[in-house]
Structures are given as C-alpha cells and as structure tokens.
Image 1 (tube, rainbow, N blue to C red):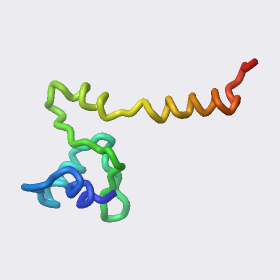
Image 2 (cartoon, rainbow, N blue to C red; image 1 turned 30 degrees about the vertical axis):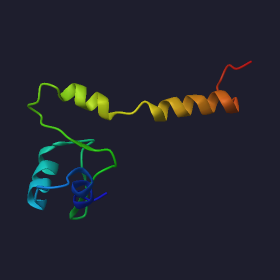
Image 3 (cartoon, rainbow, N blue to C red; image 1 turned 120 degrees about the horizontal axis):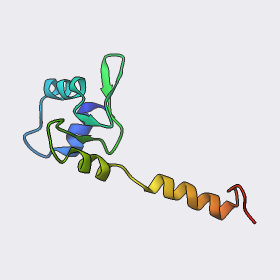
Length: 87
C-alpha cells in the first residue's frame, strides 16, 4: 500500500502531509519499515507509526506482530499430517 493509502486508513482528520510521510519513511518511523519501489514508498497492511524515542516501543512492536500466521501454519501441518515424525 502507498503512503497515501496508509494515511487514509489510519487518520480521519488532521492527516499528515505527504512530505511528513516521506520523512517518516526515510527516518525509519514505520514498523515494519517502508520499502522504496522506484520513487514511491510502500508499506505492508498493518504497519504502525513508531517513535524511536518512545519508551513503550517494544510493547507496540510486539502488539503489532501477529501470532496467527504461525498458528495457522502449525494447525495446517497437524490437520494435513505434513508434520515430520508423525504417527
């Protein structure tokens, strides 16, 4: 998703300018970090803004990470019997 799409999803009013979003992307204020594709920055869905000086940064990152993909992969292995060392 583009920076503009991310901004529209996360802000209802007083949206930051595109220059501010570019600065945040350059400075590493997104988690997971923004990737530059040509002249445009891209973000993955679920990206959060982080302040590197924030004392709660670790907690915010941990909350942003989802355990569901790993849990779903494990359940798929159990259901389909693809796990090694099975019965």
